[in-house]
Structure formats: C-alpha cells, structure tokens
Image 1 (cartoon, rainbow, N blue to C red):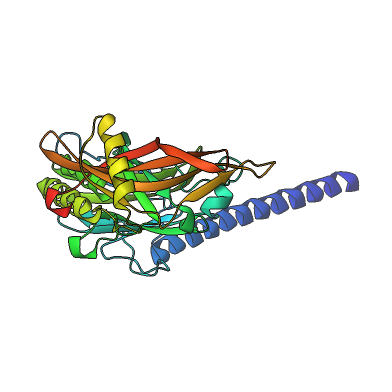
Image 2: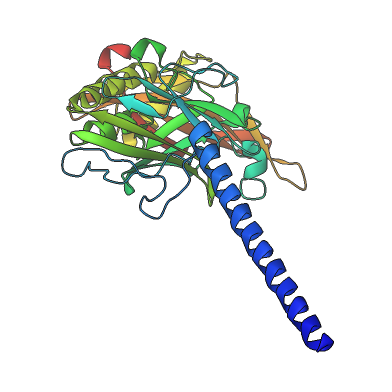
Length: 347
C-alpha cells in the first residue's frame, strides 16, 4: 500500500514539473517576440513579414520605365554620385536619387592603382591603358559604353572624378590630358551618359554604371525621375560641342618649315586634304636595339589637320627616319592615331 502511494506522489510531482517547464518556454518565446517587435518599431528596421516582401517599393512611370518593385540601391562598390562636382579627394555630398534637370557627377575609388590592376597585361612602354570600359545599364538593360584611358602620368592613380552630366562651366572631362574618354575614336564620357538619359521614357528609372577591365573594378547605381528627359538630349549636344573645342590642336613644340613640308606631302600621299602640320615633340626620339644598343631609327610626333566632307579634323601622325651607315635616311610615315573633329576656325 505504501509503495502505491509513493508512485502516485512521484507521478504527480513529474506532472507538475512538466507543466512549469512548458509555461516557462511559452513565456520565453513571448518575451522574445515582444523584444523583436519593440526593436522594429523603435529603429525602423525593415524586418520581413509573411505578408510583405522585404526591400520593395512602388513607383510609377511610362513604358519601359515602370519600377513596380525596386530593390534598394546596394551597388555602390567604389563609385558614388553627387549633384555637385567632387573635390580631388572625393569629399562632398553624395546622392542616389536625382530629378530630370539635375547635373550629375561621380567619383570612382579603385581597390588599387591602374598600374597594379593591369600589371602583367600592359606593356611597360605603354603610354596609356586601353580597354577600360565604362558600361551603362538602365532598368537592368545594357545601353551604351565607352573607354576610359589613363595616360602614363595617371598610371599610379586609384581615384578619378568622372562627369556624368556636368554643368558646362564645371566640366572636367576633355580638359584633363591624363584621361582620354573615347568611343569609336570620338569624344565620349558625359556625352554618352547624356545620350542614354536623353532617350529615357517618362517615369522613374534605375541607372547602373560599371567600370570593367576583364573584371568589374567598381560600380554604382542611382535612380532618376522625370516626365521629359529631353533636357539630357540637349546636354549631349552641348557637351559634344564643348569636347570639340577642348580637343583643339596643341601648339607646336618644334618649328622646321622644310620638315613640315615633307610631312605634309607624305600625309597628302595617303589621301589627306592637309590644312596644317604641327610638330608636337620638342625633339626626335631615338630607338635602339634592346641587346646591342645600336641605333635603329628616330621618330617624331605631329598633329595633322585636314578637311573631309566639308568638316575639319585632326589626328596624331608619327614619322620616322631609319638609321643606316652612320646617318638617317629619308622621312617615312610610321603610324597614325584616332581622328578628332574640331571647328575649322580652331586650326
């Protein structure tokens, strides 16, 4: 009889202990839920819920510009934007949203210098780094690209300010000889960006810009909203005119009438309607054999202006003289570079 009572008491105690444990678990979970709710309310945290997807907003726009569910801007990896020009250090107010009519500037910070990022893939004698592509997407669709080409003085840079659509009197593009902005041999950069924006339909759009050289070096995103993007189409035309003026010919660094006449005749023999020849090297450059050191030839650079189709252009042409028998031979064409349009009154 005693043993039966003992078992009843033991069983009752176990039931009581089990009930207390369950109650504690419920209270703990309730407390955790209360903490989470209080945190979200006080901090504005966007914690996901079962009925509301995280990171989505609603925006209206015309055809091609509808962003019904827009992910928050997260791609600012080394590239930021502003409504005003950046300082040389990149300091300034940044923005990720713009309205039609805003001027837009960017600042790029790479993880290393141009020289180190391209090490082993660019000749040690290279005067510029080519094929650094600046790509533009709108609403996840690729639009246009151009090439950013640092010249040798900028090889050790890891930061660069890049105009997106600048105010003309604050534009730095085309004025810095350390950076060439081109697409198919013509000035690009802010002209390209303005053309892309000028073709947008009314509404809100997401623009992504990427710096690419065999891999993505940097990228950034911004939103832009408006009812008429024609403002940027007009800016594209104005920027193209400004680039033309900025690309005016260099002043001569050597004057030699006889040599200039020889250069003119050689250019004419290649089909150029030559208007002017300017020697832009102060002296000849001598090339030697890498092992023996003997002289191979000497060369010199010029800018040759010419007319074509009623318009005026210039391009860099390099000439050389081969070395033989203790002296230099006759003048020869060596190489030519990209064509640049310029106002005829600038020649």
